[in-house]
Length: 278
Ligand SMILES: Nc1ncnc2c1ncn2[C@@H]1O[C@H](COP(=O)(O)OP(=O)(O)OP(=O)(O)O)[C@@H](O)[C@H]1O
Image 1 (cartoon, rainbow, N blue to C red):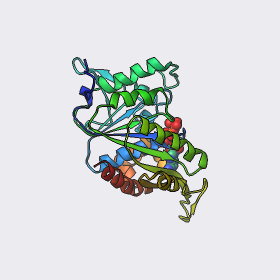
Image 2: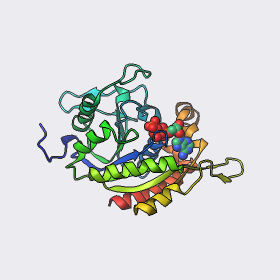
Image 3: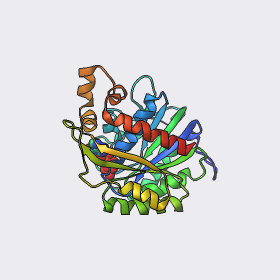
């Protein structure tokens, strides 16, 4: 039984917890979580990823783990899905508990809260350097539940907020910032995803959705700006065809990501995230 004000047992051996949030859906929050994880792994850290997007879980697909399941250990709760035998990357998502990928989760608030509580208290993460938490868009039941669970955890570094350059996304981010203030989550910085498209043939950058909205917002609200992430079709292809590419190249996702243009971009972003969280 957890006493009020305590860090859940499952997080006691986790050094840093970082949440990834966005005001709007489809802005690339899961892609950002995935790339932060890959960048940390490529630096030699042991990483866990918790997907609390209960209605649209995407972490199993992002890491090519769709066939995996979560198992209940005899004494220590749920065992996460490991990417491979090295156990450097552990992932937990409701996607691993659904019998069928197409199944939908139609739950009211209390059931969602119960599931998140279980994810927070009953996972056997073991020792981790970083636990990244991918959240659904907005500020709904899942966010309130996770904020309650993490309320007294000393190892929560804070949140990375993802936006796209469009004003409508930037406006929704302001609500997310407001939410973080209310639940006392530190904001590590704002990141602008889909910030231009780099032509793979001529390397010219076209600002399809405009650009600079994230940076202007960070200045307006006086928060660190973490950087722009362009649209890179190589990354989408890597995620979509990872099983095929792994067979073709004999490399795992972490190795293949190092050849992706976005890995250098995330190298810079990770430095800022980890220095803000230090
Ligand atoms: N910088 C990028 N370059 C190329 N593709 C990207 C980039 N960012 C996101 N994508 C692609 O856009 C799609 C949506 O991204 P993602 O699933 O990460 O968004 P999300 O904000 O997590 O969505 P949801 O609101 O459904 O949780 C995915 O197919 C992803 O591969």
